[in-house]
Image (cartoon, rainbow, N blue to C red; front, side, top):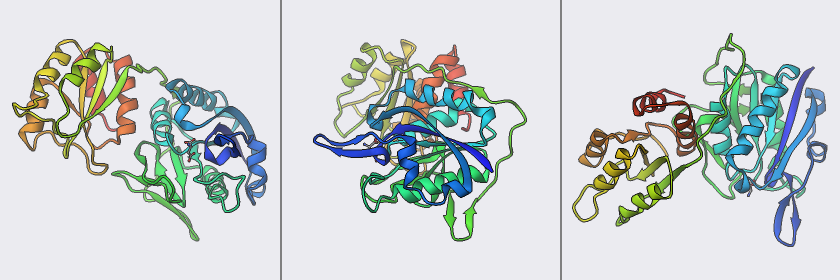
Length: 323
Ligand code: ASP
């Protein structure tokens, strides 16, 4: 029988009601009590790493999760991480990027309704997570409402709908009566697992609205941020018109060695800075394109790039590499 390690991190799935609203309190053993069929599928050990609302997670918590997987890697066939849905896409992106040469499944799941409440979607999500973990497909995946989503492609789309997660710019696998219908299979890497947990956390996202004062970018630079993702419009453009051009502020930031990445407020498809002057002029100054990565994956990737690269050219190459 497969051996699976369940890593508990908190989130709604582990919540109980309190005077202050839902608070994550359930242990791994508490959660497993309500999940039929898991004991006939695999042997499970549970490890409580933290019990937090995922909005309270910090990058150092992604590092703890990655280290926990690495530490127990040889002892288990797969890993299930129970997690809040709010920032699950950041964690799944982080683990996808941090666990290099991953040859086993690392499945992240959660719920919109606590397991402690009747009708919780967590029952199915957690059961499915173990099912996918036992399947053996290597990689980091978000399993939610019958979907299996690449960890670097996950996006929370709904705050209440049980189908909370979507796959962005990548096919997803479905869990149906026929089993797990993978659209593509991955090969198990022949190299050992490697941890890439170093992060420069002085990275932020500046979301534009029509009329945003470009001085805001200067203020972010002055606040000490080393990498700034400008979430612009459409295909990733930023205003270049005399009434509010971002180009002078972008130029000043780049001259100070700050990395500027243009991203889109659209969820699907991605950035194309070559299409209009709003993109062409920013790219000509040296702003990078976010490509088709999700904003979560882009954020973690930039945090890594700023730690492991030494020149702007290295950062560009690192950022453009498919993840
Ligand atoms: N606030 C919760 C969390 O992210 C929401 C959830 O888990 O669905 O921890």
